[in-house]
Image (cartoon, rainbow, N blue to C red):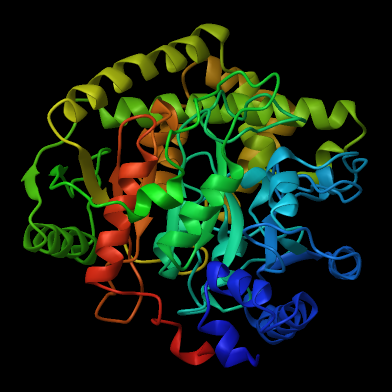
Length: 499
């Protein structure tokens, strides 16, 4: 098998080729590593190479399973590989002792025969919708390297879109699977809360808002991976029962005609780019041609209040992570200035404010549930604009330096308590979410959502659309995704300069 043949295969096809004896796992690993060598200098998708571990895995004989012999990458956040630092894109966390055991997600992928040869780049602590950690450098979009591949699973998406691997493990706490998938022309499913275990190192991530999954080029790979990853582990705080029918089989089952609600309006009231609206409008036309009933409608909720609640949780989680890391020996100065600032804001957030933010989730769940009582699925843009240029939305350097100085002197806490910092926080929130306001709803409600590559802009950039389902509705999302993939194929659309 040469690279052209490798690129024409998804993970399912590669596993079938290995099982049939048409290619060996070591040949696939060689192809993946050779491709990474080509794209790494330009795109920087991988922050830590695990070639030695992968070679040893292949030499020992890969385990028989649905992904046997397929090369893959894991994300450098939550997805622990025993004996290897999980650095979360951070110099501070990279200095801590490595985990002693695999995360359940990694263990399950290895048990399925996946050959893990590296960890993908991510913003520090996975906090952004772009991938630009100071520790490892920014990752670029294969479709246009002047633009972001999204975040926080930007390294995973860039590696898949550039042809290094057909599928990469990812995670999603506010859109971190779906945003990069939309930026890079890929499939990105965020599973329901309790579908995939976060253990054993963690019981839950971000109060259950964050979950693991994959970014892939084909719907069947996403379904297969969910079959591999799903299922409870002892001690999980959230656990959904396994479906009676495996997700891959459900994906292939006939699909009834659906009632689908749609909206292209930003939930936080910011402008939505014409291309993002066009992506949804054309998807509506496609769905109607396929016989689905599609109507304009959206959940009756306050999007700005939801964003505010999300940020309070986000601030508090960062503060807790910094405290835990420094207690283990990490140095505060090794965190990026923005992370230090967010941690300070989190420490200044009261228990009452955090509790109110969490309680808002019930209102949002009720509003989304009321919509799903009338509609099977809910369609929106995944992004409010095409993939942004590097640096878009970053706080100005002078402003960030001044805020970090206030943090270091302790004055920022006093300003926050006096209410004088709220305007700055609101601007930070608006700047960080204006391009990605559609994804946090699924995280706070624990519901599944998928981004599908159904649109390319006039400039040739991918721009995905997003479908929400009720809790436990991954099977329905995969069925519709498979129908749309057949009606409007995307697998052979690859970045022209990297084809």
